[in-house]
Amino acid sequence: MANKSMKPKSARSIPPTTPLLLTIFAIFVLYILCTSSSSSPESQLLKNSTFSPKTLIKPENENPIAAATPNERVGEKKYLYWGSRIDCPGKHCDTCAGLGHQESSLRCALEEAMYLQRTFVMPSRMCINPMHNKKGILHQSDNGITEATWAASSCAMDSLYDLSLMSETVSVILDNSKAWYRVLLTSMKLEERGAAHVKGVSRVDLKQDDQYSNYLLINRTASPLSWFAECKDRHNLSAILLPHSFLPSMAANRLRDAAEKIQLLLGDYDAMHVRRGDILKTRKDRFGVPRSLHPHLDRDTRPEFIMRRIKKWVPPGRTLFIASNERTPGFFSPLSSRYKLAYSSNFSHILEPVIENNYQLFMLERLLLMKAKTYIKTYKENENDLSLTDDPKKNTKNWQIPV
Image (cartoon, one colour):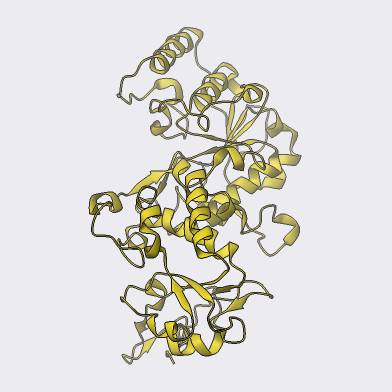
């Protein structure tokens, strides 16, 4: 509970700390901030809270994104923390989902921060699902990027997103920044008014219940749900504060710069995203018959069917940029009889110094897709979208025999 007089059992504050202990650990944390030691000691500062000890890892060298800006001094803002990993706690704690799924969860948390008018404490790293980080695909090279680099299990959040640009819409800081340390120290000084660990409390209640408004920090890691599950009303358009295009448009500056260089080389072009690979999986029913959640997708994303589908949208002779996770070399070559085909692999001289994993590659390719004169998606996500298949994108749990 927030304190003995507060009713909701879903919130509780960090236990009070004695002045002597507080002084000792304030000095200890300040010592960490002023030294370059690489150690990551656990602190009694958050001994009885639900914060992970990882929140007290020494901040990395200060940078414009991680640093607190002058108008972001502790005490002038209030903060929202959802944990050190996207979708954790939850069923993805041992591994993680792909970029798109994690972005859905991240967008959910950012929307809550906007709704509560709080600064969001963002994880400093994003988990990379190895299934979505297979080296090669359409971006191949014999040198430059090593297998070891592409096998990384996570990447720095600011290597994916421009957090300064993001903060123009919703204020964010990283959980390895000095600003976050100052928030933790201040929350201890405030004792019972410092932090509330909420579980099963809606964002509406967090905003409308006066008891929560006084807390410097609201911590949602008390919830066992995956992040995206906290967004209960995604069909209510009035509850959606950030469009799906928000995070793709927040790509890190170096990714945007590389995309602009490629865009200049492409000139006037059209583009399509062809999702195959992981989404084509099938499973056998009790009679041994293969079934798929997307029964027409394999057929609809083959070159001969693509040619028929897009001819009314893309005239012959146009430059067609293709972003895909198809692993078969030359799979889309038949389309070259009508179009000038372009892939990310055609621009390796631009990408090699920038791209370290497929999450970065996909974010850069999304920028190119969005800038195209005509953009054709794999699935129809909105009413006016052009798509290669009519199969629904959402999981209908209806396993059908593939066409």
